[in-house]
Image 1 (cartoon, rainbow, N blue to C red):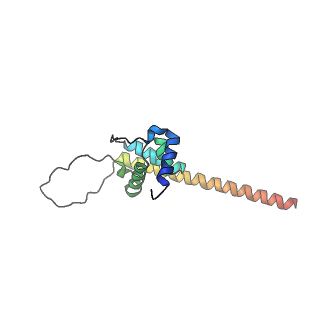
Image 2 (image 1 turned 180 degrees about the vertical axis):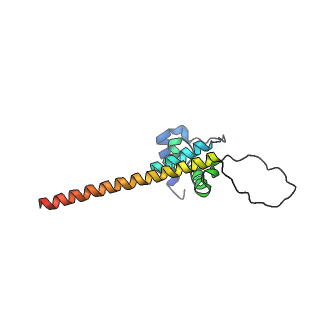
Image 3 (image 1 turned 30 degrees about the horizontal axis):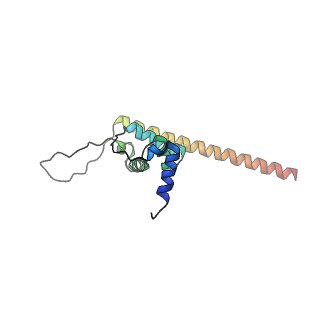
Length: 146
């Protein structure tokens, strides 16, 4: 093998979920938009790797990569279920670029995720400022003692 990373990934997955997890599954499971959003939210808020997120939800790491890419490109709309099968034949064969319009529910979901991300960033900033304040107080106290 040209790289050792797949082996490390397999070991990590087997340790977390058992050896049965490594068996290739042939079913094509479809996931709801809400499940996809929960995976992305978990990934963003816990700031863990995509592999760890995949192991937590017991899905493929490439699936997590795909959902994150679609979310970053299109937002919540990109996580919609797509119709499967062959497209019907049309009278006109012009390629028409379709623009995805979001529903009210999708707009609300997008707004909730954005607000959660802002809240998480604000909490991180607060924690950093608290730690900085504590370090300054400790430094100031040690200077007084000397």
